[in-house]
Image 1: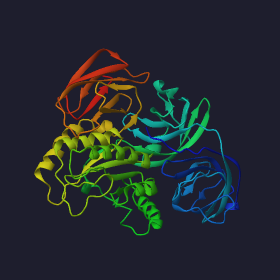
Image 2: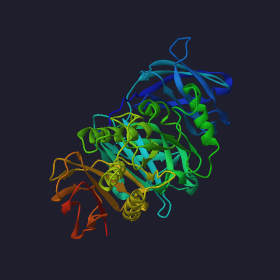
Image 3: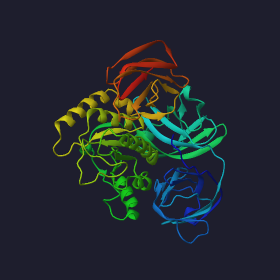
Length: 490
């Protein structure tokens, strides 16, 4: 379960220079790594240019140390919602007066901890052929919350019948879907958005990114054009990296702005810059030099969820390569050589990435690709090609799932309105086990009844359910290390 420090704030009053007097504080929240989002609305009657420079907490004359500060959009239309976001070098809870200096003037508001729906938008993607938008919401509070309404950039989402009143238990993630009245909202590859989430107990406003699906990709790292290479060691002083990332995004209009995080100061880099661009490429492999020891799988299972949490509401793709390894959670010693990645570990890494919401698997082949590695990637790609369109509109959700083997972890992804994907991964490959019979049971949200399930890859086992049911038990005759089980309405 992903934990987060949530700061819920309400405004008492605001004051500003004349040019910014119409900028109204609406809501705010912090992300786990220390990025703070202040939601604002332009009530001035004219467009406002917003170029924030410094943040001052309370009455302090010393500005808050941040890695970057940015307004989105930089020109806020009259009546529109936007956000001011900044990444704190030393995450702290902010209360009371907050002052912000802009190139256009000064603005301030009084903040205090208050009551608001404890929800975050972790992912949002459209399905153009159907005209649907899928919103993945995480409940960070202690009470069950029911979703009564969603508004995206001022447009009310017409909820699908089965999603009206969708309940999101504490600590869980659920998918809510519906349609928007205007197709222009999802015309670009990715759009910055403010989502108003209404529940019977109150409302909140959250920053989000609306991706035009499908966004899952298979390929090589070299096939990715216009990628901002690792910000943690390739671009000088960290205090200037944020500006470079936002400049890169401004120059990328035909695709999703992307940044590559390598292993150089990996956790710190994600915490500081993970929310600057909508999409990240990450080196998922993290292991020791003796493959098959417990440390490798412990490191993998620890690293993958941290990536997703550091990037939300953005997305990531995992880079997999034949023989590049990090010891524990850092770097491979240069004087040692790494063994070649076997096929079972390559598939396991891909399944692990998908289980945590990766929106792509990119294979780093090098200048002289090894024939065995190329054969492995081609075989894996053939399997994943069968579900790539579904993965492109998917997101992890929390469902009641049980497995007959306690050493097998289960994750579930909602893939649009008609499919769910169960991802099974053995938690420790240190001691290979003989293929075994395994069963997994899942219960789906109200309104979804499973008519068929199939294994993706492996034996390609398929079973039809008659009549369709809201709960299903799937049995594999020869489960080894991992499995992808696709459940559909028809």
